[in-house]
Image (cartoon, rainbow over all chains, first blue to last red; front, side, top):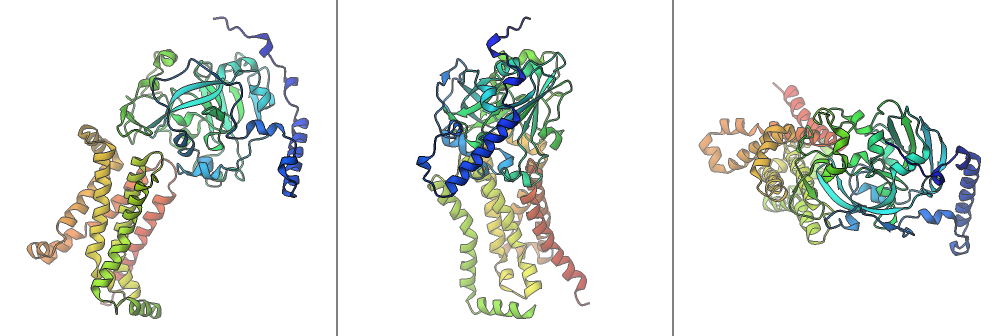
Length: 320
Length: 208
């Protein structure tokens, strides 16, 4: 199969923000914060680029996509106040309060491994060439609750193509920020930090996989994984790694956090599958948040048409 | 050890038994009242059924711990009133356990007996939880004076020793249920271990 790559997307390493400039910018930001602390009215300050990543800001130029679901959206409050994000605490209502002041500007993502364009990219440089679009996806948590979420973001495959992985790249590994000062949940070793996740290359290149930077048409709130998180709607929610700071292209299957924590219970693939139970509970049904009755869980969370071919011939009870 | 015990006993014992009973009753009803209050004020969060389940489960285990605290309080401080109201403590524990199970059967699963049965036989944490529920129910069913008379005090006592098994299984149920964060389950198990250790210590060191 011939993969066409648009020339305008191609990017050399020199196009990325050099580290020195990034550091300078950081110093500038700090200076600004000090100035505010000094009592200068914030209204007098120039608006900096940081405003673009302030949670709650409407995303400009957001286009609707064809990816949608024939089900009502889960309430905004539920999507943004009921979260599993252990870096900010293990209770569902911990992230919304503990991530309140999580600063995501500036944000750099390191691209490494088997790739033609490695380097440290400012998030804007990494995502700017792509149209941010809204996609309504089902979201199925391994704990058997589910949501319908209007994400905003870009297709992961488009970003990957631009980075030009080499022929040795068989997997994509993702890593969350490690910073216990900003992510207080990391002070307790509930999981091995930093959180790591991964996809097989063909999974990552599937058009469904996206890098999300917003929900409900707004910049991603920190508790949902700001500034950028993975969304793979045919997999259990824990695959959707949040606050990504590193993307590495690898030849070997990368380790994944929940698999490290309990290999019997969480596999690398973590595809939604009503036929394969979690050892401690059934996955046959789910409770849509906001509804009283449970509903039957669909194989691949209803995305079989798009992704079932990726797993042809694989024993899904073994590769769970 | 005697001084604070006497003061506290002095503080409560002049109160008529009936007043102590109602005070304790009111305190133990507070979690339930709080839950109802949250329910009436839209305070149960995005997943109310899960919230109610966790809340009632937490308090069921805590009420079992509370009823198991009566004897240690007597051993350590010489307080007698907790033992005198212990039947009521146990019945509150049963109430929270029963509400927890009712929520699981009626609200969470809406009488999907097939699913519930599969849970009980396949999922260890639910199996042990159900065994604990059965024990607590049989203790509640034999908690009236007539039952003690009919069974004879010796076999009644033997039956009611099963509360230790129920408490241990309840703690295990909690430990096996969580995904990764064992802190709270272990706090509860530690409290149970301390309450049992005090009994064992008193038994070993009792004057011959």
